[in-house]
Image 1 (cartoon, rainbow, N blue to C red):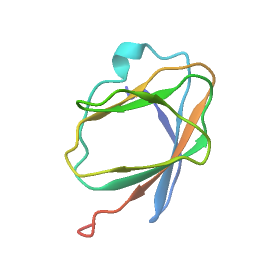
Image 2: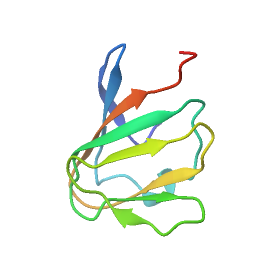
Image 3: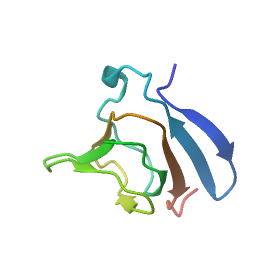
Length: 93
């Protein structure tokens, strides 16, 4: 089972939601197979984001994060609902 719910999927983006009832261990370090642009729609409270070898930072509404293909990253659990809009930037897809 995944730690999120995909609310809407289109050819352009995925609208994804994380609830605060998940176990933080489920938010594992991972890499994606393509470049992605992530827009924070609802930041909840104290949700964070971290790239490998960088300090984490708190997510804020309307913040946009570019994640390069195969770049290690993770979401850090906060409270409330975290809602993201994820755009696939990989030109091969």
